[in-house]
Amino acid sequence: MLKNFISSLFPKRCMNCGLITPDAQEFLCEKCKNSLPLTGMILGSDNEIHAKINETTRVKYASSLLFFHQENIAQTLIHHMKYKNFPELGTLLAEIWLEENKNNPVLSEIESVIPVPIHAKRERKRGYNQVELCTQWLAERLNCKFDNQALVRVHHLESQTKSGKYERLERMKNAFRRTNSEAKHYLLVDDVFTTGATLTACTEELLKIPETEVSIFTLAKVR
Ligand SMILES: [Zn+2]
Image (tube, rainbow, N blue to C red; front, side, top):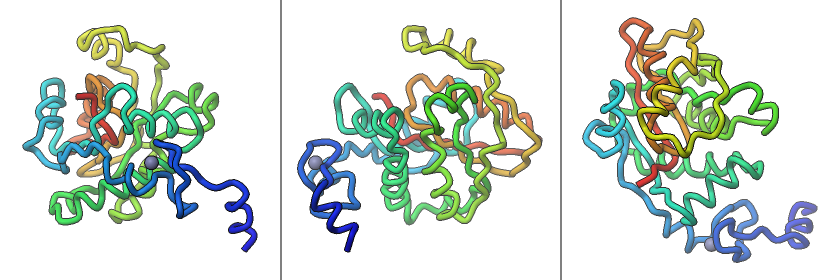
């Protein structure tokens, strides 16, 4: 009751369009939820993101939920999730992703789910790793191990949005170290797929474990 009273004082607004949402638990109004730019790329080996990441490393399955571009809804959501202390938005997207993949048999092959780590210094500054919450949620739903210790980010790189793909790949090399985790099939989770440099570096590190396979899932993908 108190909660209802509080939410009537501070009604929750849709993160995208600002409309007051009837359900105070929701981040998006029905209209915005229905207009999400879904890529249709469920976890698999015959989609655009799979082809793209396999130009630079070896990934078994790949998937991305939303198309990301300047000022679209995906950008708004990821921005709030990353910089405005709303990691729960990642869980909302993971929930939609799971629904999109509900009849996908390859999900059962995943054994361990890993959030792409951010450097400890950045995590202290931001207070959280933006994909950790949704990765943990996903691990529980998939009945998999949530392994946020499998990889450690050892180099903190400054924003590199201006560098080219190969420069990014080169700079990202050795940015991650695996620990003593060993699984047969990892699912790496990240927020946005841009050049794939970060996911390539993480995958390469995990593939050093004998007989291991790696798949990737990103909440969004730059077109
Ligand atoms: Zn809306």
